[in-house]
Length: 430
Picture 1 (cartoon, rainbow, N blue to C red):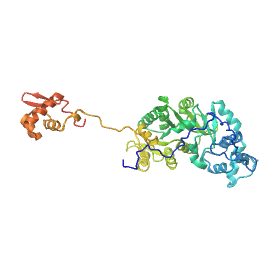
Picture 2 (picture 1 turned 180 degrees about the vertical axis):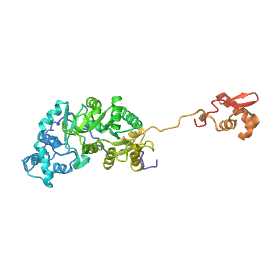
Picture 3 (picture 1 turned 120 degrees about the vertical axis):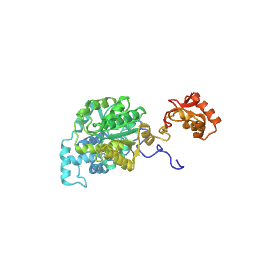
Picture 4 (picture 1 turned 90 degrees about the vertical axis):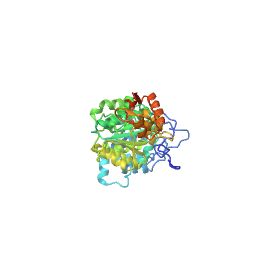
């Protein structure tokens, strides 16, 4: 490495690593003495929550309602939220507040229909009954790196699991890939998940079949941290074939959902949740992905957000490796194990061990002894004079080298000649 170009692993922009404010781990933090509430809007409702400011209960209820009213990542609603606050947005959609600018009648009508059936109190009671909670911007548990999504940031998150989402997300890596993966892909993802979790990194994925499930299982197998970002409610086990895995993550890890309790996935919601996976983590590793794969959506989001993008190469004959290889031809970095991933996303000095070829017995020989050893015939015996001629070394020196090689077990004497032992016949590079 030349001066001015540090090895991968140096400090870089990424998720928030500042310590969380003192507050209860779950739910809204207590207001600090002298803290000021969000300024009211013209309708007398709380305005947008400022960074680091605890949300009022009305704001929390409104954000919970918005998770049922709008689809995840709805940027129009996100702009309204930033300009007016959640309470004013919900009031407008419920008909008790002033209409909002930039709306189209058909879209506005659809949002109002959803607003009419939103029951945030019931949703909050449902998630609490299932052992979960709802967190939103301003809570001590809110991971502020999600704010990098701008107007497409989640309105709030429904969680199941004891750990703090913010603390777990500080050292987290996304492992994503094909649902219909190969045995090679499943083994590689499980090994990667286990290796990262053993080193204290949270493995984040989508709880889907294939690579996602393998990465989660790898982390759980070593009793390490793993979090699943769902495209449905946090209390819905989808896909059905992963019910046991999702239950285990809810008990020993974290389940994360943008959608309220009971909501089911759609094709678009699977795509939209990928942006949360990319934003939440320090980097994304793609393990097997075809040229048209949802995992590539996560990869592109990670790059756009300035996160590290990595790919684990596969067989060039496999269609499931083509998407990964295209990423590697671009801005992605090749990784093959957990140490190499951590070198990319970790702090200064967290470098992967240098790889070296295994040592072989011939490595210990001097150049002169190696030259004499290579002059012996591969089969049968050779006389001293013939060996000296082949090596281009005087007979006295050859004899001394032969005795050295005999002591080390490379050659043996046969009458007046010398021949190679099984060790001496070994391939020179192992």
